[in-house]
Length: 249
Image (cartoon, rainbow, N blue to C red; front, side):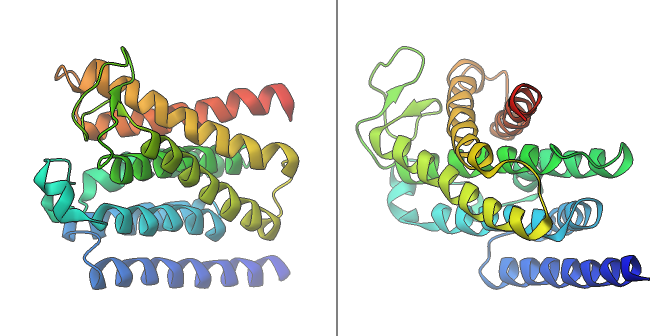
């Protein structure tokens, strides 16, 4: 009976959180119609097959990332470094950044809950947050160099890195690590905090660099689109987390 009550409470919180996510998204024009539907699917998958705290981690990224996208938007548009569709994100963007988190939640539910699942999810979201803040804030820094050869390139170039973007990438990963560490205490996550906290930051930042390398080597040559690069980067984050977990936890 206690479990049924807990399940009912979790379900209520999950539905409330997804509702808040969709309302904020529509109110602030964060997502278009396709993006709203994708967010609904991703949000319910993560919260019902994982835990509602998992959804809060992803919501933190989505909201902060969307505001970063709209930050100084006109200036980014002048150098063609702005997000397409006036900064309103669609279903491809939602799936590119939240698809991996959904797959982890499904694996957690259908294969059986594992202590590593939350760490893997937070690491993949950390990559998404790190990359988004690096792109949206770093794209206005003229001190941009391509990550593969360190040649100077125009600000906003795929695979470009700048001092501002590199710092923004760290803060994006730090934000997700702080939020997910606090939520981990709420959902009973048993991963040692002294390992969880620094590794979510490190993996997020490294995943951002992987995104830049993929952007420079594959996206600029037309082999991969932006969303494909983003998804592979978040996948790399979850794989790095799995590697760390099997070695250290």
